[in-house]
Amino acid sequence: MSGLSPGRHCLLSWSLLLLVLLLLFLLVVLPWQRQNATYDETLRDWQVRLQQFREKTEDRAALEAQLNDPGHDASVRTDYLRGSTPALTGAELQQKIKTMVEATGGQLLSTQLVLPSGEEARVPKVSVKVRMIGDTADLLKTLYAIESSRPILFVEDVAVRSARKRPSELSEMLNINLTVVGYMHQGEAAQ
Image (tube, rainbow, N blue to C red; front, top):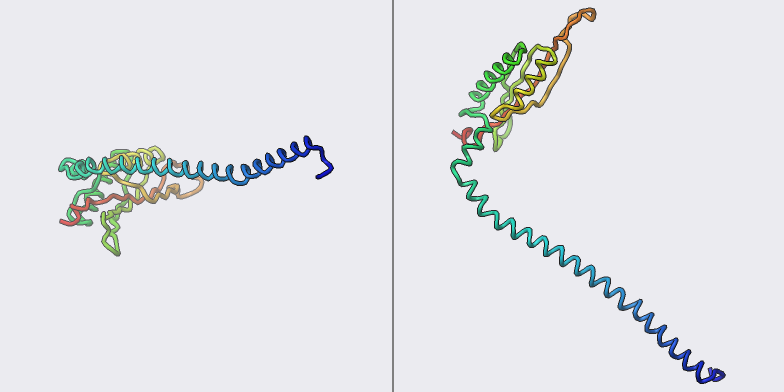
C-alpha cells in the first residue's frame, strides 16, 4: 500500500469503511428490523384476539340472561318430542308418522319402536323403523313432511326397493324402509 498515491489511499480507505458499514447494516440492522416487524405483527394478532375475547365476555351476560329466561326454554321445547318415557314418546311418534304417511298418499305397512340400549344419554333418542309402500312422489312428500315437522325429526336410514314381484310387471310402487329419529327434552325425560 505504500506504492499508492495519497488520493488513492484515501479513496481506498473510505471505500473499505463504507464496505464495513454496509456489511454491518446487512448482517445486523436488517435482521433486527425483520425480527421487530415479526414481533409487531404477532403483537397485533394478540391484540385482535384479546379484543375478540373481551367482546365475547361482554356478550356472556346477555346470553346467560337469555338462557335463564323462562320463555326461552319453552321455545326450545317445541323442537323436542314430549313424553315422560321413551316408550310413550315412541308411541306418539309412531302415531305422528302414521298420520304423515297417510296424508302424503303412501301406505304404511308397519312401524317399530327401537328402544335405546346402553348408557343414558343427556338427550334421550327415540327411533322408529317405518315400512311403507308408495311411489317416488309419496316418498318425497313423506320425507319432506318428516324433516319439516315440529318437533324436529331426522331420517337416518333409507332403503328403497321396487315393489314388483316379477320383472315383466310394470309398477312404480316402491318398498320403503326408513328410520325416523327424534329427541326428548332433557327435562321431560327426567320426569
